[in-house]
Each structure stands twice: as C-alpha cells, then as structure tokens.
Image (cartoon, rainbow, N blue to C red):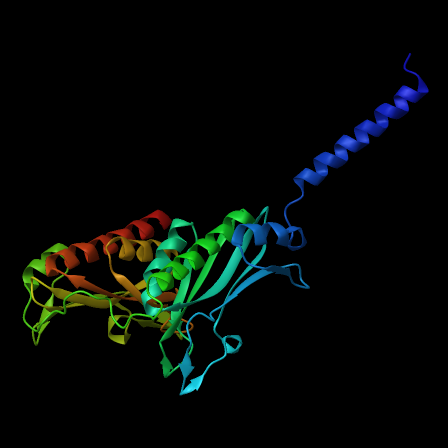
Length: 309
C-alpha cells in the first residue's frame, strides 16, 4: 500500500504539474511584454505605460528642421516611436518614424526585410526645411523580433545620415529632357493602352466602389495611373496605385523591387466600400524598363487579389 505521506506528496506534485501546464497555455498579455527585452533588442530605452504597452522612442536631434521659419524642437513633433502590445499569443507593434526624403528608400527596404509592414507615408507639416516625412509601420509576431525590426529601420536611417549629414535635394543621376516616348510599346508591356498628350504617355486603370449608396468609379478618381515623360533613353514614370487593404504590402514591395521610389501612402476618401488606399511613386530610367517595372507591380497586385478570392 502507498503510505499517506506518499499519497500526499503525489497529490502535491500533480497539482504543481497542472499549474505549470495551465501557465504555459496562457497567452501573452500587455503586462507580459518585458521592457528589458524590448530595450535589448531595439537599443532604445523602453518604458512600460500604465496600460502595460511598452514604448520606445528616438528623437530626431541629428538634423535641424525649420517649420514656417521657426526652428522646431524635436519634442514638438520630430520624434520617432514604436509601441508594443499583445496580439493573441504574440505581440503587435505600431509606430511612426521621422524620415527625410533621401532616407525613405532605406527605411522602407529595412522594414520589409525585417518583416514589418509600412502603413502610411506622408507629411505632418507645411513649409518645413528640410522636408520631413513620416513613415508609419506595423507588424505582429514575437516581441523581440519586432523590436529588432524597428532597430533595423532606425539603423538604416542613421546610416544614410552618417554617409551624408545633410539631407539630399534630389534622387541624383541625369535629368531627363523633354521629348517623346514609344507609347505603343509601353502600352503593350503594361497591358493597357497609353494615351499621348503633349509628349506624355499616360495609362489609366479604373476601379469601382460605393459611397453614400452610389457607385463611384474612375471618373471620380478611383484609378491607378502612370505617366511617362522624357525620352525612350531616359524617362520618368510617376503616378499612383489604388489598392484595397490586402493589396498594399505586396504593391509596396513590388514598387521597391522595381526600383521605384515610394513618395506617399495614404487614403483619398473616407467611407467608400471597400476602403481604398493610394501609393504615389516616382521612377527614372529607360522608358521600357520603367514600363516592365510597372507591369510587375500590377502583376503583384493581381496576385494579391487572387490570393484573397
């Protein structure tokens, strides 16, 4: 027979094992995100907020900015930040990063390489010198991986400034001269006919949505478009792509892979169904190479749409 002591010891061990199992099954909550681990992974001071969210920050003191002729203190709106909160058994990150125009490519590429999403790119000021932009990021996963991703974005920005302390005033390279491009060849590559006006070849692709109970379409601004200027040898391509939420990240990545500069990401409307977002871009190079790059962007968007259907 098992002694009373053995039975008591066995019962205690059983209760202990059940407790350990239950604790292991509990998902991560906001209060469980360790600011020490976030600090170690991000290289930035991490502070736990009253609601348990952990935040890090980086003040852009490295580049002086004037807004409307006034020197703007970094604490008045030139701070980069990221916040970490629970998401099921993992975590989510949201943040806003100050980027000057020549830092956007590096910051965005670093975000994508780290598995983060870019959710917005726009201005917060008028008449600022140099022009300050703001790139919003997001993601979900293991907290320290997310924190390391934010660090990679900020490190990429710092590397740009280390190589050139003053923000650049252009993308560099030769400037296209006014001429004409082969609109027919461009249209065949992109898969949509190009209209020519004053030497500019423009392709427009419409979409539809509903607003206030009515159908709205291309004539109301729900379009993807691209305009080719310059010559066949050296042209620019600028435009924007209209996207549903599920298409945004694939389109952004495709634009960067095709060497287009992403210059804005935002909405144009409020209340449309489905909700649409717009990414504006700029590219420079041989006209047909730009056309092939834009076609790859459209193909990526179509793949995203098919994946959801």
